[in-house]
Amino acid sequence: MDERALAGVMEQVSQTQTALNIVWTILAAALVMFMQAGFALVETGFSRPKNVAHTMAINFLVYSIAVIAYWLIGFGLQMGGVGAVSSLGLESGLTREFTIQIAGRSHGLFGLTGFCTPPSIMTPALAALFMFQLVFMATGTIIPTGALLERWKFSAFMIFSFVIAAVIYPVYANWVWGGGFLSTLGRNFGLGHGHVDFAGSSVVHMTGGVTAFVAASLLGPRFGKYNLRGDSQALPAHSIPLIVTGTFILAFGWFGFNAGSTLSGMDTHFAIVAVNTMLASASGAVAGAMWSWKRFGKPDVTMMCNGMLAGLVAITAPCAFVPAWSALFIGSIAGVLVIESTLFIERRLRIDDPAGAISVHGVCGSFGVFALGIFADGSYGAGLNGVTTPVRGILYGDPGQLIAQLIGIGTNMTWVGSAAAVSFLVIEKLIGHRPRLEDEVIGLDLTEMGMEGYYSEDPTRAMPVGRPRLGEGPTTPYDPPTFTGLASGTRARS
Image 1: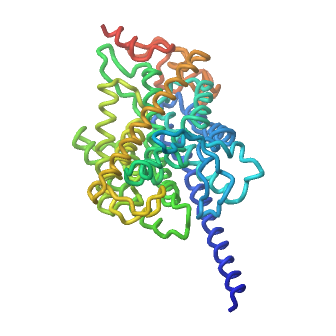
Image 2 (image 1 turned 180 degrees about the vertical axis):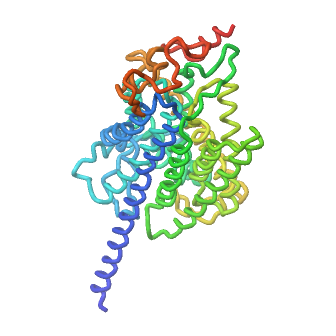
Image 3 (image 1 turned 90 degrees about the vertical axis):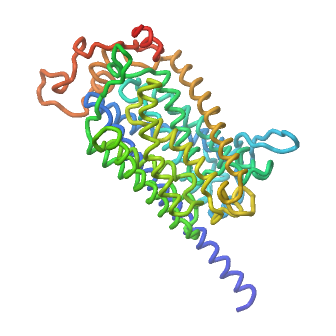
């Protein structure tokens, strides 16, 4: 075979590999998109019957709002300066990053190209990258809704979700995945490979969890959640089948989340990523079952499910870099951590989080990022973020990696927490977040959506049997549907 023919064959092979990588990336994105159904079922299961339609509507529409916001603004901010993505054949188009110079080094802050995916750069490679990053963003955007169930106005939800998808999430994602300053901590300061997050423990889950923490703190608890002494009262989940089914859907989609983050079907390491993902989910579920049994005297099904999700969240950052035994250990710790943090947040901080979103995504997301800095064993990651050696944690000789992980955690809390608080406060001033007390007691299905999630054939009954009518609820302090949060509850108790 002459040189020209050989070059033609090599070119064809390269194009075939790129095409397969694009197919792999789109399939993985489809799996992640299906996780929206899992979130909808889990969050609806944790709500009460009078808020089912409202919860489903929020979970349905948040995806579409996020898509539009990300296409308009978010993708450009996140990926506008990422440069080439060789596995997808993306060599140009996303080449401008806004940077600042500190101590003679460039530090990226946000992208400057890619807004509205203009035709001049819209290639199949860029489309695949856009799709994959979009569904990750949509996951981060939906997380706060689980903490704000049953007491959030639909109009306020729409505005806040747009802000998360357009600005809050993309800016932090740029710092980690778009060539921003956290990803260059290794090159600039010798801290391992910089902040490393393979599939989103910090970028997706911590962002959603920190946002949920801030928003739920400011919004205040549901009516009846705390009694006159300030003790937490159970407002039970209405459907265990929905929660369990939704959890399995999320676990299924997580293989696209983690394994798909190779962005390459030719990178067979994705099989190891998938196994680590499965092991962490299983150990998280078992740990959740056993620890809840010890804690409450009976194994709690909801804690089993949140234990599985906690294991998945925690393994998302280190899934490509740790051995199987570490994945089991990380999942087990997360399964216990999610229960203890849930109880602490609910009982000590008195923050009402119906679905446990703060603990599952915020607490366990930060634990997963931290775990990478400890357990990464040097088996993978050579070349990541421009560092030639594989990724190693402190147990395998690189304490700098742990420092970079901690910097990423602190940066997430600072940026996401402050940006979410400012956004929430501005929206409160504009239209308010809480519905009226009467509306919340009756249920947001009728008052906000004009329909019930579960239809009643009795036309004389406005609410399902057992639903408290106005004036018949428990004798508890109630923070009026203004922006008073827990403060007024404290005054009532005194």
